[in-house]
Image (cartoon, rainbow, N blue to C red; front, side):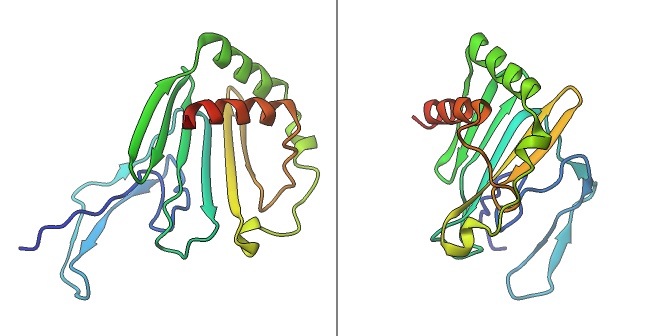
Length: 168
């Protein structure tokens, strides 16, 4: 038998694209270059309790070798910052969490989504960013490939500050 590890950041495929939560999946593992495979015995689902989920892709990184960070903040303010060097975890203060929830609730996502993007930043070696917001009846996904995200909007200003704190 050959023993080896594969580093899989849960919730993404091998190209670091987000995998939809709630769907049912199975895993198949094959010995490289052969049809010698084994499959999962039971299907599984990926659950997401995230308030905010942020993924990055593209940049000066040829696929499939890219493994950009993932930032997740759950409904209770617990955050995880997942990078190739491993995950870091922490918690927002109660005031930060309250402010973030207030900003998400107050955001006019129809207006935010009114300006369509003409291209993906990764087309010019930039980084594509996808934001997912889930709070009560709000379930919004915004990508800078699809929309010109207004980074001067108070929600994104606050998120920028929180992300900066999480990364440092």
